[in-house]
Structures are given as C-alpha cells and as structure tokens.
Length: 134
Image 1 (spheres, rainbow, N blue to C red):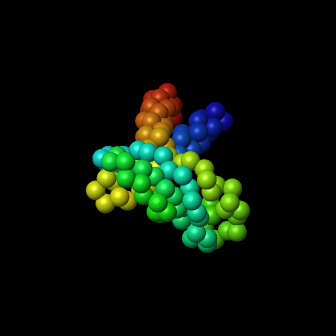
Image 2 (image 1 turned 45 degrees about the horizontal axis):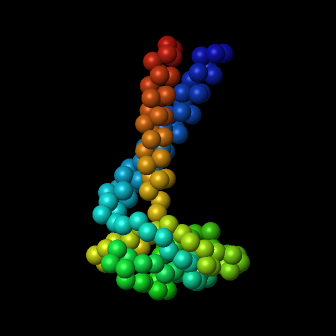
C-alpha cells in the first residue's frame, strides 16, 4: 500500500516537473529576448475592448514621453465586458526595447520564479526517486 502511494506521488511530481520545465524553457527564452530591455513605469490611459490591449504613457531613458502607446495585452479583458475604468490611471511596471520602442508587461519576476521552481522540483524528484526503492 505504501509503495503504491509512493509511486503515485512520484508520478505526480514527475508530471508537475515536466510542466515546470516547459514553463522554464519559455521563461528562459523570454528573459533572453528581453535581456537588453529597460524597466520603467507607465500610466494606463485606455483599454481597447474586446482586444484587451492596454494603452498608456511612459517616459523612456532619454526623457522622451511616449503617449497612448500599446503597452501590453491583458488577457483578462479579452472578450469580456469588464469595467475598464478601474485600471485607467493606474501605474504599471513595463519593460521596453530602447531600439524599436516595443513594450511588454514586466513579468521578469515570474520568469525567474518559474526557473527556481523547476530546480526545486528537480531536487525533490531526485530525492523521491533515490529514497523510493520499488
């Protein structure tokens, strides 16, 4: 009975580990693509519905103001009739490419977190398989 339970736990951790590794690959790719991008804050000026595109104003590294530019897409607004006025005027963290001025929401913390979780899950899975003698 205990061996069956251990095997189920091992399979669940393996499944979560595989998903986590896939997310980490995506995260590493995004970190690499945005490695030279600059972090700043922007003020949300509008949301296009039903697309969910967030428009805003930010100041770049050369103190040039970019007004009413697409910042990122918020998928929670996509196809929904949410009250967009709740987010208008709020400050959000973004990253932007200084060369082509492309912007995105600053998800770097979550990208690094997913990589750390994958490493921890790998250690846990290794410990489980080492201790499990089936």
